[in-house]
Length: 269
Image (cartoon, rainbow, N blue to C red; front, side, top):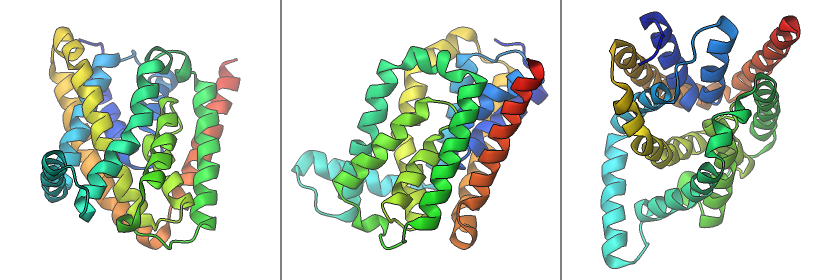
């Protein structure tokens, strides 16, 4: 299916899992690692396989939440009423998904080609790092997830749409938007994780045929396993870490990585 070694597949799977939920951009790491280390490009089907790993971790970690949301979604569909916190959350996740879905369809080709240039990725890493640092440092933490409105959900969804550009980061953009809207760190992270479910699921479902057509070999299985384990760890660690330390360390990491990419581009001429 691809020319990756098992070690390279494990590294890319780990980068996907960590980058999907930490605000550091999985797409940036997946596009930069082969470029930086002169590895063969794994291809779109392998990327889809890695998303299956993160999806497994996401479903498993928030299993009780997904069960409650599924019941709420059924209630909304059958009754037409939105009353409980869970029912509102289902609607807000749906609203937040729309901008990314629309732009994803419109710019799918660009997202897989011209948006993946190292210089653009590095610029996005640094710019979003600055915005994340500013939002987490400046915005108060006066709102909880239970207080969210549909307008706030839509704004966070619009921020997610920019994650088509590697380096922006889906979790980074949504967490930044939520913090700028004065949601506390825990609420910002949890809503970011929950609203990733439709996007990751849609990407996997739409492109699984390409994965199956290319065949599933050991590198794919290793990548999926690495992505699942690292995703679980990323979610668990982030939820505990941010309560005490905030998001500044991730902003600094983005700055350093972006500058390193600039330097490597200059060195290679």
